[in-house]
Length: 227
Image (cartoon, rainbow, N blue to C red; front, side, top):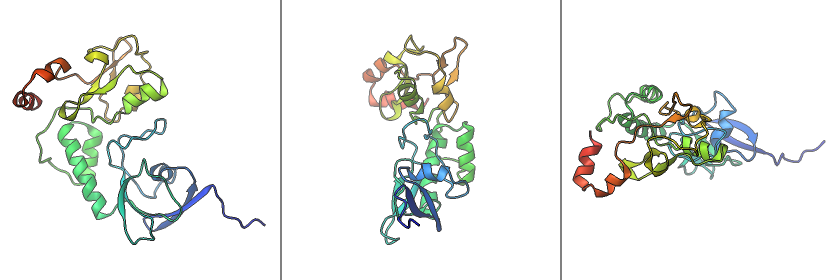
């Protein structure tokens, strides 16, 4: 009989339950294969694409010193380790997720998946000005185009409140680089990208052309963003 430990397995504790998973997985990946243990929300995760940690909804508390201290980590990026203690639904975590969901609901008040999360976490009305967006800027569409298809037909452009998904050179229509595969639309968690009648995806409408942003004053930018 071989009593040697399985080097390909990781034993750790999730919400007071001892579990064993295959080594080399993130916490989120491991728990996705174990329904009913550590239910963790996420909007920017797709198993076919490298994790990015954009939405931060999958944040959990982790201890690696037998529960003496805990810290927040993005479970889609953090590896499952031997002897870890993971908490997925503490008061601190729910408060953190509630804040993130409130911001998402303010940006995308009409998106169903965000409305459902808001209801689950008790977010009734955001304290912030409501936007009219469908895109949460998770970047799944861009990464699907690059990692799965090997193209760069779309990308995230600009920074801050002007950040958005766009075609090269801020074109309103995708060019020849787009092969019309529809992967960007398929992985979009909010339905912001749809397939058009020409067989190519229709991106969220650009609100401010890039060339105009640089010429605007701070006051003009703020006024435009609130329209």
